[in-house]
Every structure is written in C-alpha cells, then in structure tokens.
Amino acid sequence: MSKRFFLNKVAIVTGASDGIGRATALALARQGAHVAISARREARLEQVASEIKVYGKEILVAAADVTDSSQVAQLVDGVIERWGCVDILIANAGEYVRAPVQSLTLTDLQHSMAINFYGGIYAILAVLPHMRQRNSGHIVVVTSMNGKKGMPLDAPYAAAKFAMTGFAEVLRQELYGSGIFVSNILPGRVDTEMIRNLKVPWISAKIKPEAVARAILIAIEKRKPEVILPPLAVWLHYVNVLSPKWGDAITRFFHLEGWKN
Image 1 (cartoon, rainbow, N blue to C red):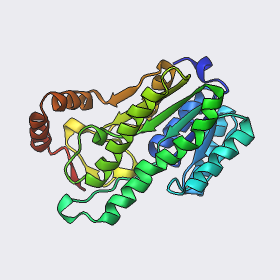
Image 2 (image 1 turned 120 degrees about the vertical axis):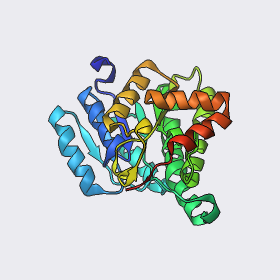
Image 3 (image 1 turned 60 degrees about the vertical axis):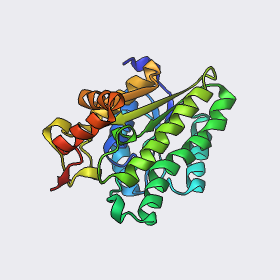
C-alpha cells in the first residue's frame, strides 16, 4: 500500500468501536488519513480514538445509531463541516442475527435488515450527493460471505447481506465513469466480538480483523470492485457458482454454520 495515496484523505468508518471497523480506522490513520469513527458505544469509540491519536492524525468521534437515518445524516454533515469533504465511506456497522427459518419471526428479519442493510444504505445516501458534487470518492460496503453463500441458521443475516451485495452491484455500475468507486468486501468468519461464542470448523477458521482491514485499504487503492477472503472462502464461492448442490454438500460436510461454544 502507498501511504501517499491515503495521506490527508477524510474517511468515515461506521461500526468502529470494535472488530473490523476498529482495525480499519486504525489502518487508515496509520496510512495518513483523517478518520471519523462512529458506533453506538461512545466509551468504546473514545478508546479507539486514543489509539488513533498515536499516529498524529485528526479524528472525530461521533456516536450514532445507523438504524436512525437522521443520526447518520448528522454524522456526515459533521464530517463535512469539520474537514470540508468525505473521500472514503466504510459502511461497516453490523450485527450477527441468527434464527432457523422455521422459527424465524418478522422481528428477527426486520432487526437484521435495519442494521445490516438500511444502516449501510443511510450512510451511502448521505454521502452520495456530496461525492457526486465533487466527482470523487470511494464507498466500501463490508458485507459477508453470507452475501454470496448463505449458511444454515443465518437467514436474517444472509438476507440483509445479500441485499447489500445486490445494492452495491447496481451502485457500482451506475457510478461508472463518475469518479466515485464502490467496493464490496465479503469476509468469511472473522474473529470479532460479534461471533465470539460461535465455534467454527478448521476449514473456516476465523481470520483476524486486521486482515480484513488490509483488504479494505488495498481495495480502495486498487479500486477493486469486490474482495472475498480468505482464499478458502473464494474456493467455496466458485464451487457454489458452478454447482449450488456441491456448495450445499460442502457446507453440510464441514458444518460451516458452526456451533455455539
């Protein structure tokens, strides 16, 4: 990665209090960017801010609930007021919502969509007019391999991630030639608080949030439309594209849905 590329860029990271969001905010600051970090837990954000300050970059802490469009709009307005622009949006906030389809309630589904889909949509729609005015920007959505291959028990989560993946596909094409780029990051299992109580088989071992953060920065610099990681997740994706029957069989054989500790 080129530090010059990110130097003094202004980035917003949602879901930045832990996991992928925290690792990405730190990685951006390390590369010279100014970072606005947002999540619901302000105390946790302040901890992340203290880590970022080590790199000598400006930081804005903005507690916000991404399910509230007005709070997301205020976040974006605050960043523009502070720095005059938004160069990068990392729409990362999410929550792992599980329920077997046979016992799924509308509340489960609505809750997952509110955070994992609409939370990202609100942020995108808030920054898009500004980026269109400048003909410049990069939007990164952090979805999941569940947005390509749904795992058993993950219906609420997979539905939201598939929705965001589809939205990103359309957005990327509609913005072609505008100077605004879109990247969809689809990690497999990540070692975060969100799935701390989920035990997974060796073949889908949890990867570090820092590995995802690095993939995000490379995607921005190289303008990659889509990144799936780790390599075994890429393999599963292509098997499933060629034969959903075999994709299902692999999922069952290795119990890729995992089980509670």
